[in-house]
Image (tube, rainbow, N blue to C red; front, top):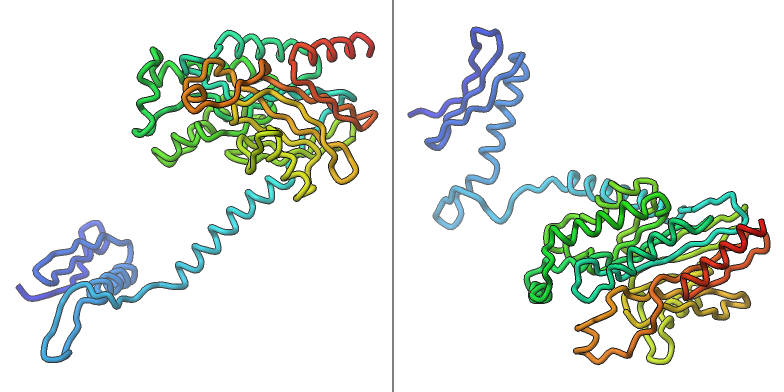
Length: 349
């Protein structure tokens, strides 16, 4: 059959483009005007022709796809610029985050490493402490990662062998917990266990859960930098699940090292290590900084036992009280003591 490129007027008044080339028929489409049809016909012909013929080279001709082909570098450059600008806009938001409170004294409670669904997690304590925070005056919740076990990667599936709870069961517990803390949940930071799902499917499922139950909360998958403003006094903070650097003599060494090098936050909060729930003050270029390390609710930790981790202390949630009137921060590694302090401040207000 002879090759052709037809523009045909249909009964509807529109114009159809059909092309026969290389023993193949292409139905390009139907267009409102003849001018549009002709333009699309020419574009399609150019597409068919581009890179197909390599003639008169050393006595032979080849038809098909070649290594040397036209690339629209302007299009690639434009998409690269758009991608960077989009990421930059998100980063600028991260650098300008603020939590503002009108009260003169505010308590933030930090929890991490709940590992809901793990056989060794003290589920009663996790929910009891969350309920206590909901009752404490002028007190708010910050979660610092590893709320779930989330062993969905194939190489980690063995970790679920001794659990009676399925992944759907685990998600049910997480949603129950999120629903409980939602009214006072102000910041959520993900951990490495939340990241397992993103590795598997390329989607941040934890972000969706936070958006469902606490759309008002600040969220970061890795590293939340925030200014806590209490009655106009500002306290700069940084919250992340895992910090770089460790020491067998100082469990908060990673936080303190980052504060001393960067000098852009007054309090830092972490988790991940399952070592202890700690509050540690340290000298920060002539001022007093606070390093807060959350304890784990996974109280019977087969992984830690197998690798010989040091015994953890009994603390889980930790707290920092921000006094806007006096410009001070006071840390508590015992949630009950923090509660007594906030209750007494409420009575004396």
